[in-house]
Image 1 (spheres, rainbow, N blue to C red):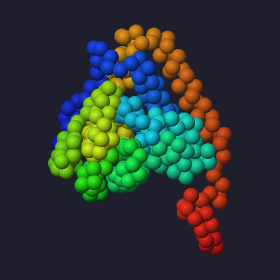
Image 2 (image 1 turned 90 degrees about the vertical axis):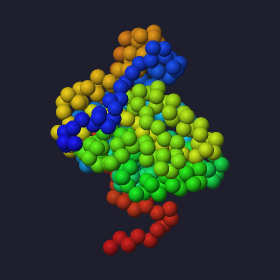
Image 3 (image 1 turned 90 degrees about the horizontal axis):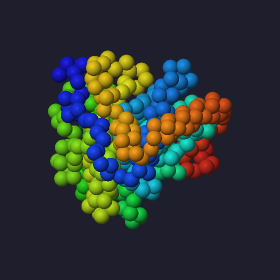
Image 4 (image 1 turned 180 degrees about the horizontal axis):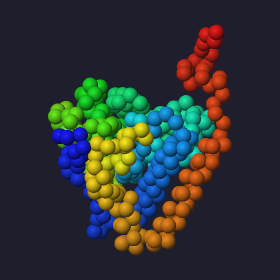
Length: 349
């Protein structure tokens, strides 16, 4: 396949669709709308600030993939654990981490959710059970299985949802984790966010298996594709997987067929895809689908949604002001949060 070939050939062109009759209560749709708009506006602002060189280093935006998080949050409990790769700003936002703390982390400030030490790729917030933010491709997969093992061992009734990108399914650690998770029936939901491109290379050029969910079938793991542009479908698939996990039936592998509107990172001009392909997916935007459902079913008015938009815009602007005025970490922070032992004898020559 040529390098600028359309990813949708492997994606089966997922669409953001609005059901004729809402599947969920008004409160759920409004919450989804608020969460996804916050993710979108936050990421758009982060992109602007990166262009102004106020945010430095690596920065991977989530624009276009918002339904993959919003639908999962509504299907799980606050006690479940979350882990993902380095496209990780949206997950803690939806889980309830303050935008101030996330923006401050992007600015490498001491008030950031990782104390300014992690930056864009290593967000953590124990308070909402978000355990990163991991920069090594696929490394979070066995960690997610390990977290699920801990939940099972401690008989908490909780589970771990473990996200990864489509490039991670080619890592050997994934297959080792899948085998152990099935053998021990661990309460883990493995999710591959298949946005069509592992960095800048289409799935067809990197994998003989292009229907990625079928990889789970090799381990007899319940596996299915999910329209990642449809928040209702995401919620339902995660809810089914969670029910199996809590019943002691073990893991599930879900392939969220989604799309990112930006490049792999801020340094990626995304020349490997056409403008027509990008526009085609923008027409299926998950936020617009939820907005359409809300308006056509009388759940809120245009003015109501405009008020939500303005509230979130102000929230994002506040996070920027907070980050700009926050201090950088002091030098002694270099020696903190490395070892559990508080008086570890560092050599400071």
